Every structure is written in C-alpha cells, then in structure tokens.
Length: 105
Image (tube, rainbow, N blue to C red; front, side, top):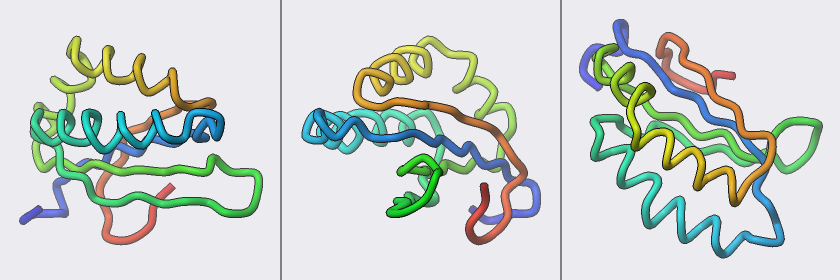
C-alpha cells in the first residue's frame, strides 16, 4: 500500500477445525487468499495464537480504496468464500478498521 493513512484493513478471526486442518489449508491457500487478492485486496498478515482465550487465527487484508472493500463485502463471491471457510473453522468473525502499521485487533 502506498498511502496507508487512508487505507482500511479487513480482519478475519476464527478457530481452525483441527479435524479438518488439511481441508482448511487447501482451501485457504488454494482458493480463499487468491480470490480475495483477485478482488483487489492485499493480504497484510496472518497470525496464530498458540495460547489463550483468543481465536487461533487472525488474518488481515488491506485496501486503499473503501469502495473496493465495500464491493467485496457486498458481493456474492465474499458470501460464497465465507460460507466455504465456515465449513473448516469455528467462531468466524470479521471487522473493518482503519489501517495502521503493525498488529491490530
């Protein structure tokens, strides 16, 4: 991102279903991330929580253009990707926040 001051970040948190870890990784790496990037979002981070009462995954995508992010979240592809992701994870949640460099929750 060139102008991070005006960017937005989409944070997606969830717990990976350990009984379906292989299916999760195949979906996220083979379809989810490439399709999100194809819609104009840039993956900014992926975090794993090893200990504590937090979701064990937090991934972030950024966009300089709020219209692009709004189009993604209102689109049919987002709904399909979210539904398919929910087959591999629990406690799926997301939010949009102003972009700042570094870890955000």
